[in-house]
Image (tube, rainbow, N blue to C red):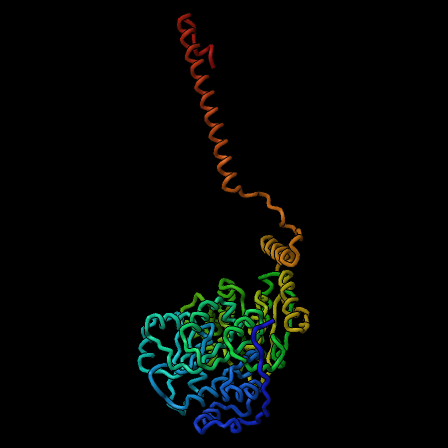
Amino acid sequence: MPKWKFKSYLCIMQNNFEQFGFNKQILNAIEAIGYTDPTLIQQKAIPPIINGQDVLGIAQTGTGKTAAYLLPIIKKLGFAQDQIPRAVILAPTRELAMQIEENTISLCQFTDLRIGAVYGGLGPKPQKEMLAKGIDILIATPGRLLELYLAGDLVFKKLQVLVLDEADKMLDMGFISKINRILEVIPKKRQNLLFSATMSDKVEILVGDFLLFPTKVEVSLQATPAKNVEQRVYMVPNLKSKINLLYHFLLDEETFQKVIVFCKTKTIADNVYHYISRKFGEDQVKVIHANKGQNTRINSMEAFKEGSVRVLVGTDVASRGIDVTEVTHVINFDVPLIYEDYVHRIGRTGRAEKLGVSITFSNESETLHLAKIEKLIRQKIPVLPIPDGVIFAETSFNEKQAIAREIDEHKRKEDPTFKGSFHEKKFKRPSADEKKKLAKQKEQQLNKGNAKSKTKSSTDDKTKKTLRKKGKNWDKKIK
């Protein structure tokens, strides 16, 4: 049982932003951005945050949760004050940190609050200069925040609010030790806000350490995709066939107007990018993943947002850092191995109450993961027939072997006694002790052979001498 308990919070749902008591500057910013009515997560989360309570928010991507915690923070801080941050928002990736910074700047456009973001991938010097000028709201990734703190460029003694956004992803990426270190150096008396798309076991543990009698707000079932996203699955046997199906869809430019293609590895993402650029032109596609430089990723993202690029190819590093309302389709070129990432991927479409389509390509081994995803989201994803005209390539021997191996490994995780096609190794690598034993045996055999060779050589020498004494031809007698 968890050591913490949730507070119940009863509030009247607000139909407009004026009823939250926001000042004129905030309401003007809301109007300038184009927000009309508060979303469900905003209706539920804003009142307890304004009242100073710790809040746990469970909400899928695209529901407006960023504004749900930003608006009360802006109201609380009011105006620029001091040189050190009074609110810190932690995000798992640079892309998400940049997105939050952009949203914060928009919501603070009629105030004098100072906003900045710090993250890895760039040199710390300009970020240090930015902090030295003074800041009120700081958005950061955990690693860079600790780096700047340890270097003496950050002070937290005036901190009032700490936000952990996308907490589940942060924990999946191994940030728990850095988060615990941050919690040790910031003031104990503060308001804590934690937002997550899923409520995993890791998040439950973090809630117990991070939040004090939190109010829980949840707008949908955990790990439930947005209702305005139509999900489809196509059974595709191999990599080349996936490429052919992707090409078939992208030919329909009128329907597939703005597309994000998610791949499970950087290599596959690069290969898909090169293929699309050859078929449709380099000006139609960009690729982002961890090996791309920060400026390249920023420029690619901006080009996609502006609409100058039609297709964005990437790995899951981008699944939570894109906020583009016009994305028509998300294509899962590979089924994600972290099942919660499926929700975050397809959450890139169907945003701002618009309809979107999610398409997933699955080979034989990936159907096992797809079944787990369906269990997680409590939905059966319909499998559609392959469209006419799509050519299925023959699966190579190596790809067949790789698929069979993955099926075996997956089943063995479920049942350790399972024995598949690859459970016996044809060659067993010897242990260190066995290697020493074999080396010793080889040395003994070598010494024994040398001894025999010496004995034979000595016998031959004696025979030579005897024959010479008898005056006989040695070469004819001894071969």
